[in-house]
Image 1 (cartoon, rainbow over the protein chains, first blue to last red):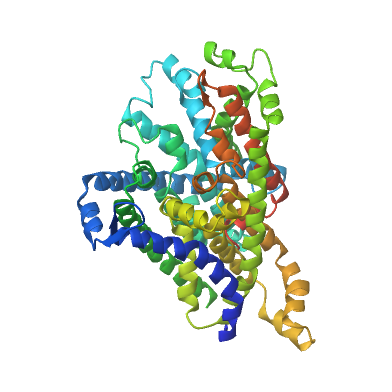
Image 2 (spheres, rainbow over the protein chains, first blue to last red; image 1 turned 90 degrees about the vertical axis):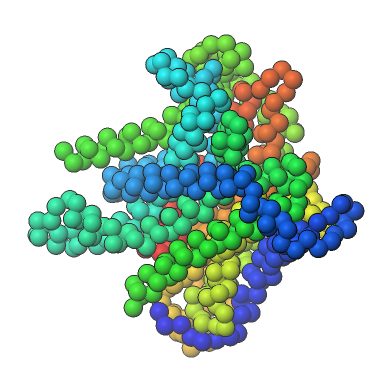
Length: 290
Length: 267
């Protein structure tokens, strides 16, 4: 749609601007303040320049947390996106079963994060959990509180359980918007199932799929509550992701300067990747509307 | 043959989703001794004691009341400010619109962990700490950008000729917006409200940091079930089941819009 140039539209945006400025800019300025200053308490600050940033960039703790975070996000995107597409392709098209599937699939998305953690904690515990007990009965040596590998598997399966439905629902919405004649034409051309998917369904889904990947990237990159409840970042530091490490540093140890410098860099990384996604997304949008 | 294949896939996937929830529910109907001493698929002695504990103890059930209060406040505020902004983004080009839109979205990307401590200090210094409005405002950080994004997607689907016709017919902006435009995107508003509700309801970190006693959320209340006698699994799981119920009710109401809603109106 052709938009009209009108600078008065700023007045319509003003409430949002004020509200978000209050709840985003002021706190962000506090973070920036901490990041460049050092303090001995009593609200007395002195300039520390880039000191905290240098310390954080060289910190092996940060590198390890970042490495684990990238690995985690990579793994869950690699599992959830194909699985979500696959589930969406298999969902019933209409009628009672379609509604039932939609409602049941949306259910995990509306469970508070800490309850998700609790569910998987009680599900996987070796002493009282269904999965833990079953695996033990089958002779599998599984204990997520001691073994880093088991902890990783637990956290990843939990995230797949929690968020695959989001990807699936998005893809499902994309699939529903494909007009029936496309499929009829494909049938006349005797296209194989794979080429229908590759040349009709996938291009039509690309827009929503990008939203899915963007949302999953952002949310998995700042995941905090679920692994915190299940593993507490352990065993050792093996499931300490960036957010968990940050909260430990800022609220646990009250190392405000390093934590603030860490926050800013963390935010910038997310911002950068999201900007790339967003640019690609708006590019696709404008092409579609042409 | 193909139908049966997809049925199997969906059955397996839904089982994967539901079995952990079933385990949570099953456990909430057991007594603590049964949970720790024996291993049963169904509750041996079915008990409602865990639910009675929660529903008769103010320190428990007030958690739900507090959560609902700030979630509703947040939803109302988010939608109210997002509506005009989304209209502006969907209809007009103005100075810096693209940058502003991305800046708004970037707040959705900010990790709550980054903001937890500054929020605590900000709200303490203006005397809002431990109030419902503090949590509601803090959650606006990620809900307002999302609401603008969703509503903009829906509004783009309404042809601009409708606006022009209304103006020619002598409608003022306010009357046009509330009487003609809002009913047209009612499903979009519903979907945006659903998302605001959802993300505010499930968030733990900010609501825990910003409340202590008076406005303590249910998520924060649940973290205190570790007592001297060990974990109180029965009550913890019962509380968990009760947090799922509001979500399930909301899903039921928006089930017909859910697919399009998840695509943020962009299909």
